[in-house]
Image 1 (spheres, rainbow, N blue to C red):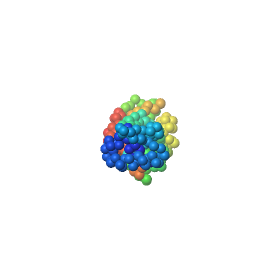
Image 2 (cartoon, rainbow, N blue to C red):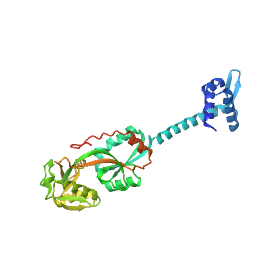
Image 3 (cartoon, rainbow, N blue to C red):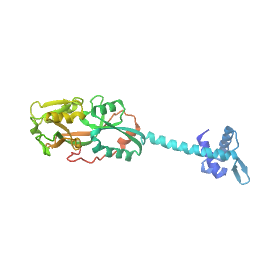
Image 4 (cartoon, one colour):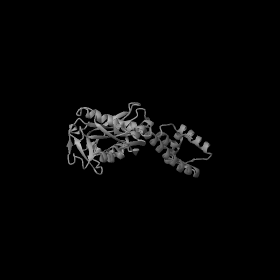
Amino acid sequence: MRINYIREFIELAEELNYTKSAERLFMTQPVLSRHIQSMEEELGVKLLERTTHGVKLTDAGHMVYEELTGILERYDLFLEKLSLQKKGLLGNLNFGILYYAINDFLDDIVLEIERVCPGVDASVHSCQSPGLCQDLISGKLDLGLTHRVSLPKDPPLRVLDIRNERLAILFSIAHRFGGREKISARELGDEIFVFMKSEPWHEAYVKSLLSRYLPGEIKTVYTEQIDTVRSAVANNGAVFVVANHIANAGLKNLASALFEEEDLTIMMSLAYRDDNENPALAAFLERQRIAIQPAANAVLS
């Protein structure tokens, strides 16, 4: 049964006048009559009968009217949802975030997704850096917040830069830097630096930055991942270079201090695959106006 025939029948059932209904439907009365007759033949029942004053619904017509009205409402709602889904305003967006960045970034990003795409459900996944990158590449995640420098060169990922974060160092509360709020990179020549085996980009990036201030090789120790950094710092009297939002997280038994040098920063970015076909991602990127509130001493990009 054609959907336009259903609309015409409902109009006629409510107006009960062929002439007025045909005018409202922008069609001729004979065409409307033929369409109603076609419905009656398809259903095998008489829907309307003529009276001296116009037409009235038969008992079967009343039942068909009630059923088709509900069907048409659901069909129109389906079309509306389908249109929103095509525009990316309905659906699901898988968003990954470094778990130690949740406090500083998550609320602002999720609120922006809800603002520009109110029909999109943001599924949040807490990740560590290597896993987040892998999930972006595999397509498990649509969007991920991470350090820009940690992203692989191949395959390339597109980025939306969020905040250029000042770097800080973590150290044991018993360290000689205890009580300091700022430290110069030039003071770190005799320090042992902790790096993670799982994140070689971090070591390369930190060493590149420190080479501006420290000649020669720096002393290093390695730990497996971010969760074991605390013990590596404490056991070796070492320091660990981090983005300031991590230092602000208040890790137990560790203190932190900002670098005095304002060029020691790391960019926090939203990353995504350019060939991601999720319409919700395209809609978010087109409409977003993210304004992450800066953490203390952040350098805004």
